[in-house]
Image (cartoon, rainbow, N blue to C red):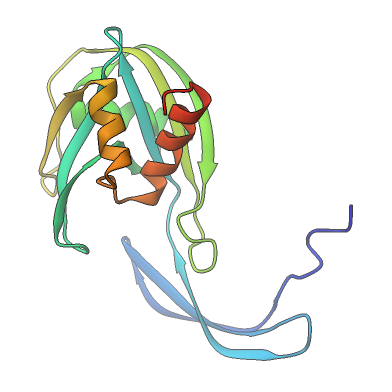
Length: 186
């Protein structure tokens, strides 16, 4: 197979426009392999993210519901969060987030897939985990900036959310659709 990296753009100039913990953006002047230039191409730097398809011992799905200001909607989501610098791995981040946001833990964990929210402009990846046989081991321990509720959903309820386009975040919908397809649930 031909070298897949042969179409890489050349960065001619790079300038940070904004550097904050939740928004770091740079503007770059780039040259395409054909010699054309893009004078202003914007790149958003984020830490890696995680999300978790968490399934209880009773075969129910652990979801959260929270308001998302960008869309102005409250919606169902997988438990998700940021890979913190002090976390030694995405798995540790995923286990920490599930415990903090929902109070669920334990179980069997596998990294299910890795996706990019937007490889055109985002630098990070989302590590999606499948956690089976989880159980409630504590209460929620939310950060001051978090306001979410925990919902334990049946297979049919999750299927309905997917089929009626109620899971808006693509990085949440993609692993759920994959799980349902692989297990012939849809």
